[in-house]
Image 1 (cartoon, helix red, strand yellow):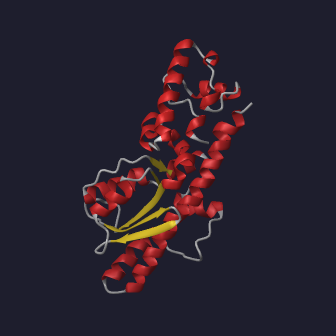
Image 2: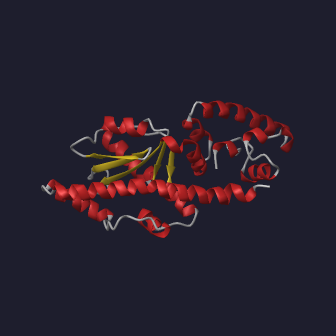
Image 3: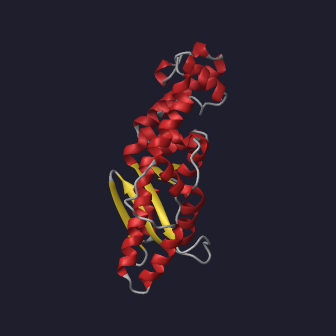
Length: 248
């Protein structure tokens, strides 16, 4: 599903009206006819289409993130997938007061980069990598990763964000990222490392074990790369559940 299939950002258009528009043949903006709705709603839809088309031509994902309801941000993925940044962090604990970030992995355009504390993990680098992204994709990043990084590195990360934790729940996938991966049959190459292990590995590295850091980085990178597989599955499911089943 793409943003061009969507009318729900328009004031006065809820889920029922949007689905009725699809059933009546207005499955894309260019197929909309004012006679399908009342005159005031029709005017608002036409105004939205004109404005949104310009922002889409400009590649302005932030406009759509502002206009779409929060639980419908997944609709941006198909349009901005080529410039999406998948990311995941590892920390020494859950408390921002007593814990620190150890690694941050970023997966974009088929390439994965891992930033390591004490090496290249800096606020400037994070702001450049995450702050300028067209679209962020994470698992629980809105509630944990982003606030953690913002607090520790004094950042402002307000890029459009698709959080897979909530979308997975929406399509019946649960159990954290590990559970979702297992349910989808995503291969981790035999790596059996947990979040608790990730903390232990960092401290072992701090004690001089370089191999522990190698394992930690591999774990973090796998989590990040696998987000792409998960989002593809979830958005396909949502496409069927929200859009395709209401087509004429």
